[in-house]
Amino acid sequence: RSRAVPMRGDGQGQPASKTGRLVIVSNRVADLSKGNLAGGLAVAVGEALKSSGGLWFGWSGARSAEAHSKGPNIQTFGNVSTATVDLTEKEFEDYYLGFSNRCLWPLFHYRLDLAELHTTGQATYFEVNKRFAAEVAPLIQTDDTIWVHDYHLIPFAAHLRQKQVTNRIGFFLHIPFPAPELFSALPHHRDFAKTFFAYDLVGFQTVRDRENFARYAEEYLNCRRLNDGRLRGFGRTLRIEAFPIGIDAESFAAEAEKNARAPELRALAREVESERLIVGVDRLDYSKGLPERVRAMGSLLEKWPNYIGKVQLLQIAPPTREGVQAYDEIRSELERITGEVNGRYGDFVWSPVRYVNRPVPRAMLAGLFRRSRVGLVTPLRDGMNLVAKEYVAAQDPADPGVLVLSQFAGAAEQMEEALMVNPHDPAETATAIRRALEMPLGERRARHKALWNQIVSESVGWWRERFLAVLHETNGQPATPGGP
Ligand code: ADQ
Image (cartoon, rainbow, N blue to C red; front, side, top):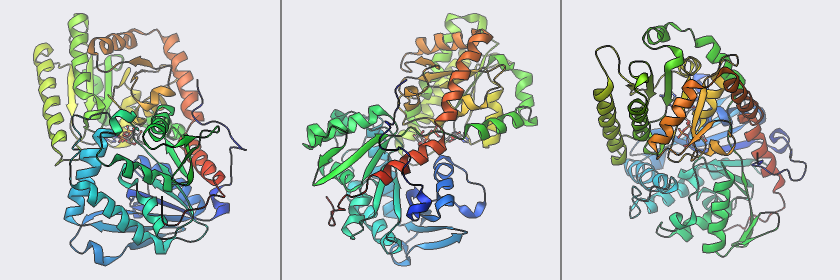
């Protein structure tokens, strides 16, 4: 297996606590007053903030007409503060729903057909990044390390550099970076892409994403690739690396064990035996390959009718980004195909696909994963996909379920012992589901053990520490006040 992060230097760097505070910047800020951190990003960076002390800056989640005059709302929880700002209605529409989610999200997920490239949102997107940079700049201390997250905030550092901020600034892209030929379809893509060079380090989920970016920079921006992999361009040297994000496998496993016998799951157990249960858990997003997955269930039942009345796909898919047309469409499409497959194969007491259109508590998901024989994670494109890792973490090592994984999930670069499929081919996915349902215990255990070792060693803590360690190795660079 290829190591995504090459060992360079001592690879350990300085712990963040010895080099000042950590400042996290992300579109949304977790509500730290709630005690328990929920949500992937919050859990992933929450620990780092607590250990070094720090500040978390971003959008409050609220929209208000006075967004520009209020200044950040600062709250302190022990050694961590949050600073949040509102968006105006127009900013929400153009920066968040518009450019971020109608243009960048589909484009970066290889869906040129869905990307609204000519949106007027691009200007507002830059303005919001500029305003956020202006609001956070006075809060930055000289020895702070700044870590910016995700596609909403790509030009953030360029604006911060214009405020004479010379601190180390790292960026992590949670979603794929597309093939250069796709990225270059974005109007003004060069102006957009050069803002990456205001960072000291840009992290990607996979080697493929990193190499897509490097190839784009060389071919379209005339950058030079140095022998050590760094990119030279716009008067700066940019370090780019792959840092596959992970989970806290042990705590998810404990949660799964505790909840596998939860009363809420008992009714389900009466209806379909665990060895015949297939689960899928995704936000209802067109990148997740949900209609293709339901078609694969249809294909399974058509080819192997002995499964009729016996197996069930339980698909949990809560709606997200309502108000973006492509999301309304994927929902209707999924409902139509589910209806079709259920209509064709279901009867009075059984249906092949059960579809739950709302969020389920994490503890319950963990228990559900443990009670199922097959985990179906078949996105058409995904930065990483944490559900794949959670599914493995939740299994009983003595009698584990099998992960069926799309070759287009970032997780496929690490999780080679999953049953890999091309999600565009329902027949291939159906064959993999059958293989998973029939897999002998010995093979299930061996595959699970290898995957478990992988997710434990490349955990979320490993991801965070590696990113910060490499960011701390990038010293000695002029910050180029004025931006690239
Ligand atoms: P997402 O696209 O949201 O994340 P994913 O990595 O699978 O995708 O994370 C989703 C998280 O939400 C998981 O922890 C999952 O358990 C949870 N979840 C999903 N459906 C749920 C439901 N119905 N109820 C409750 N919880 C649910 C983006 C990128 C990914 C990347 C992550 C982290 O798109 O590729 O892995 O960020 O970097």
